Image 1: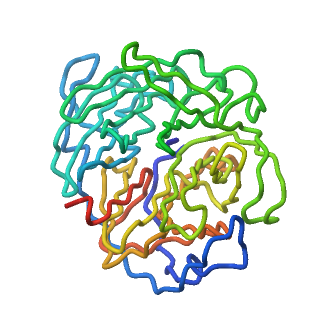
Image 2 (image 1 turned 120 degrees about the vertical axis):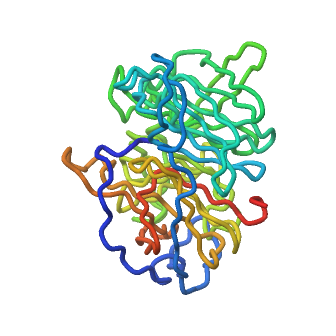
Length: 383
């Protein structure tokens, strides 16, 4: 995930959320999915469950204890959650201003009790649990000099290096497990070499780990300039991708109103989401704003968790009910390619219409939130 160019400022008053803007199906259909019924959205409340200022790790240079800062990605497995505090480390693994070079991955309960934590060298940008094993995979360094870690809850963290220089000349970010395969986004293409977009640059890698050699082998899944079809504007028309910022990713759950079961790559700066059932089938959904993470509600009962990079916190967003299939997004206005260098607009939580790409701001009560990473935990898995 790419952090905002400027730390979030206090959010403006949230606009009221209406059902018509999100789940009322339009006439769009490609690949066809049933229209979601209308509903009146409930209110959402925010509560901080984890605060980096109250946690600590040892500075990798000085050995002194210091607070955790800059949480980014989130994942969950086995009833617990995991997040990564980047602690000021740079996007190529550069030391923070105090000399520290380690991020800290924290395992915690839904109520915010810390279970375990691991320091790993580099800036952790992607963090995802392997649903088959429970291992947590963390990618480090989103711009260059990337590697990854396999973290075993209750055990240690093992570093893997890539089998060859990454051909997109950038770093790595989000991880998703799709049809049993580890998918890693090829972030910051063209950090060295030719600029993006570039037809020779992969947008996503399929990655295989060798536990004996601690080597991660990569192969391209699709490319920054792959052929695709338009999912909203000029529906169904052919187009060529021109990705400059592959970032977050996810797998669309069966409850979603469209693209069920597809792999989704978010190109944050380009304001696009690409949905794929296989490398030869790509649909591009144009968005009105840059977004970071996307999380879908998968049950009526549950909790949406979000990191707030500027506040150094993880918050729980609760409601009396969640409509299954609702797509929540962390809107990051200052991460759009078109955003001015002086951008100071705050991140906010939005509801994404998967048919037309519209985003409606979520009205939050009893708390503020400028989200970065998102994960939805249904009530059954948190018990």
